[in-house]
Length: 120
Image (cartoon, rainbow, N blue to C red; front, side, top):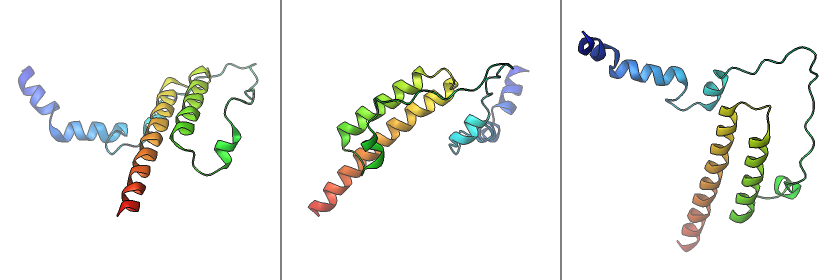
């Protein structure tokens, strides 16, 4: 009975439908994060504004795209601030790490393509 049930349950269409429903195929981080339950606040606790971080230089935010070293340093500062935050759920923290890593990779690919274009 198990073998018959497994053949029906683990069909390609069922697996793909599960991934689609979870927002994993095609990847939709917003859909994934919307499914994560938000922590419930108890009454009596007033929301607070976190102190302004002075570790991330504002020129990185207001200027042209940073070079690779500046970008890695800024990403490290952002990721450490996100990890230290107790208000964010773990999936949001992991998503932030993936976003910064993805941005660094995309930036490196862009630089390589620009050099190839200049050489051509």
